[in-house]
Length: 165
Image (cartoon, rainbow, N blue to C red; front, side, top):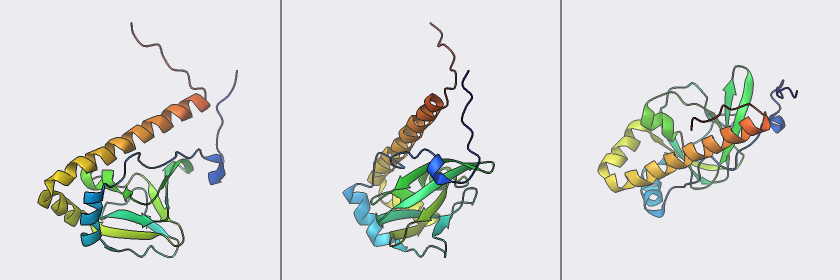
């Protein structure tokens, strides 16, 4: 019987990478509002915007370049996704008022903007029609994560139970 593959290091090449953080990006109308309200962001020396488990303080908008997001379970990195231009990062944490579930690290030369959690909520209150795009982005993240989980379960050959008839 095949045993599940166990990752024993932090080598990200061993971690399956999902295509993108979300299948949905910021639409042109929300992008325009984001451009007006979001300020420049300077990642820390190692490029980290936030770490898994940090309380959410800001939401981030990727104007150009890529941000890599990783999720750890214990000491192992178990998921890696990328956010490109037009992505909002930290959205589930800001909306859910829960700690970030991933660590976000900006690549060199990335143009990232940030807005405080309170200012983002105020933006949605001021422009309620933008809420639909935010819901679409969150739904896209959920869909991407479910697809990644399904792929991982298949790769690890995890047995699944039969559905009741």
